[in-house]
Image 1 (cartoon, rainbow over the protein chains, first blue to last red):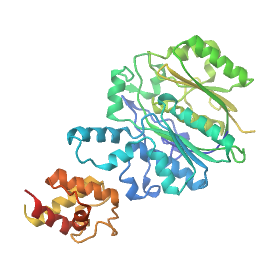
Image 2 (cartoon, rainbow over the protein chains, first blue to last red; image 1 turned 30 degrees about the vertical axis):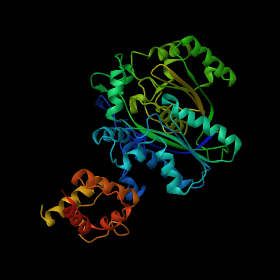
Image 3 (tube, each protein chain N blue to C red; image 1 turned 120 degrees about the horizontal axis):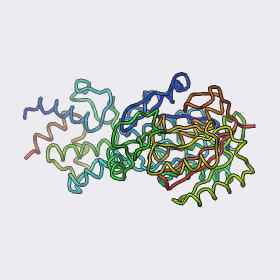
Image 4 (cartoon, helix red, strand yellow; image 1 turned 60 degrees about the horizontal axis):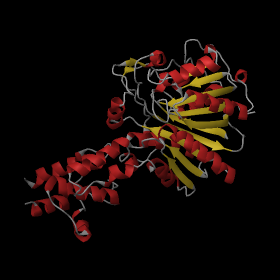
Length: 346
Length: 86
């Protein structure tokens, strides 16, 4: 599968293209929130006023690409939580008004498929429309859906993900020990060794196609596994490499989802010790924080690096490194693991 | 509550309930139609207005025909509230 175009809203200046011109923005906080663009030129006011943050970010990134590629043959979205803030508002209304008359907007906008549906309605797209919601692998599932869809029909497809921070998921994740108890310097997140991480949010969308004409990157392969056993995980990774007839020396950069969480960073530590040189490590959660579909940001960043847009992500990164092939390894709190190989299109 | 005061309160509540971006109470004329005019409201907004009437004024509109006579503009809505409250 080839990535033809991409768009990203994140806690960095990724939507306006300034991300690669300066140092990444640093935060000292318990959570990092997305920098949203002015949507007035992207979304009609009548629709915008009803949208929660997650839906806005998803539509904003998606519609930007659909203006360039209006004839996509499918819209496939991955999101663990969708418009969670609206969902909680709606649930609270049920309690507050004793299951009486409820406002429809919160309900309509809170369903995870609101983004794919809104994008289709806004562009009169009647093709395949699907949303995947399996937590830390929601984006990968959407990508797998795209891969299978492209085997059956022509492209291109719009594929992407979105996630928003809400008080609800912060509270739940805090109780689970997934959020750091004190403010953290985001740029130092990967070095942190306390419990939990720094929650982030954002949306990334991609135009995916079978043809390599004008492609920005090539997704060679990707695979996922749900396990807490490192031996099972590494056997899986060894098979992944073997299936791709790929040696580690052929990989220029390893994009790792290090999130500074002492609960489950040992998977990354073991992976680094077993497979890779420190100089080839790249990180991304020190830019955007942790969220279930952060893998899509790793794909966005890898594609940009392969395209020659360089930025210093870690201290030991070669200053003008050129990347032909990047291998991404990410896991969501030590259970849902994901591998992906992204290459320069040849 | 006086009619003039009620109309101003209604405008504030409508902006809040419908999250009308960049609209101020002074932008809404008393006889400006909710639907088909500059406000650009739609069928989902009509449901939001029904909920507003119930929550803020204790008035239930259960008959769609009645709703059509009330949800026209600020004048009609305010008069209906004064006639039906309590």
